[in-house]
Image (cartoon, rainbow, N blue to C red; front, side):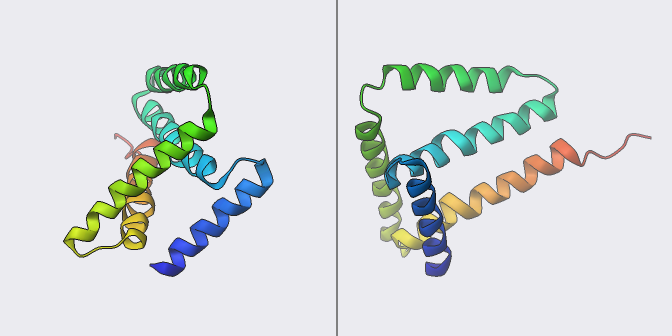
Length: 125
């Protein structure tokens, strides 16, 4: 688990250096904007509509417009998220394991399900 966590951390740090955003800002952009938007994109593809993409884009835009300091917003949201992951310590997990399972494994499972439904539909004969 630690290797996967470290690899993810290094990738996010690379993105941070590439974009000029802090590690915490990149973390929030990836897990709270990019990944959810890609999911609503796939859901809209499955449904044949554009409602979820439009709704998500509008909500995200409104939140970002009313966010006075994106760095402070990201720092706060990152800490809330980290505290959530630390709560799993009480059931025998730890921050690293919880991060890998909740932030990587579960999203990958969701991607597999959504991509299969969006692009590999059974042909109706």
